[in-house]
Length: 203
Image 1 (cartoon, helix red, strand yellow):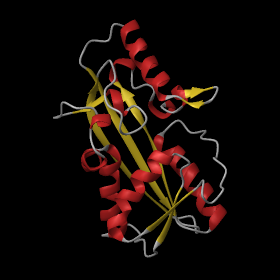
Image 2 (cartoon, helix red, strand yellow; image 1 turned 30 degrees about the horizontal axis):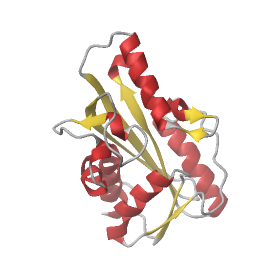
Image 3 (cartoon, one colour; image 1 turned 45 degrees about the vertical axis):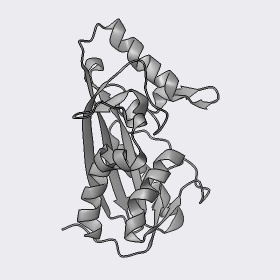
């Protein structure tokens, strides 16, 4: 049986403004105050694992042990079938540039590599999100979600973040970056893992 969350304040262990905003929108109906790791002046721990769950645990435990607050961490990324599941846990690494993260650079790399290896179209892919909710006493709960889709080029849309402008979810003809936050949050990988979290720890 999963442990229930009985507080009214949760630390979301991310320095990513887009991800934090998504979490704030998802938690808003539940009356839970969300505070981000950047706001708490927490350093970003080194993500040394090779799985989403491993890296999410690193971030969640670093945050809960530093603050004494229950901490929720998400490790997410995109798996591209034509690239044997890459970039996967290295999704953000593909965006690393001298002046910070540049996801246009990352999306261009994904496109160029698909073309270079003659990957057949449609370029199927999925976004994955693994949430770990950790408590200061060392207990944690894990919830994983996915959304399947395909990649398009050139990119489309100005909304969202990350690889959203090139990802069209199954059953839709618009990219995540062409959808409103409400539309995306209803079907995204994070919405999937979040609904499991709510059912498990808040239901």
